[in-house]
Image 1 (cartoon, helix red, strand yellow):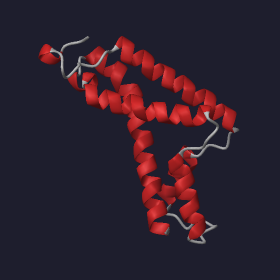
Image 2: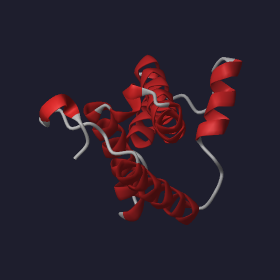
Image 3: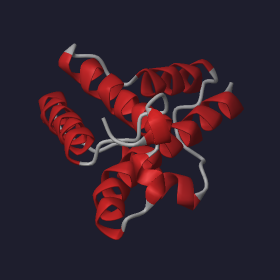
Length: 134
């Protein structure tokens, strides 16, 4: 159980990194004319991931990855962490000690920003001739 919980933790870190990377890379890539930032499926996955996070927060639910990892850690009987130092620091970065309403506002704001990026830096539509714009 502990190994599965740790795997979920690292998947969670990867999802967070993907989301943060997209929020930075899209406007920077539009400015620098990087073509990958207009890839439709990459952008749809990014917007969808952020949408799931924002929706969970609006519904008053914690992230399902957090819940899953916590449940598996508890089932393994692991209360005190014996995690490597890097995992401990990343955990502190990922899990901030703020009230839930702070996260709800943050996630909704980030979701709105991602929607704005979709509008300002539109992805290439794969079904459009030559994959250009809308």
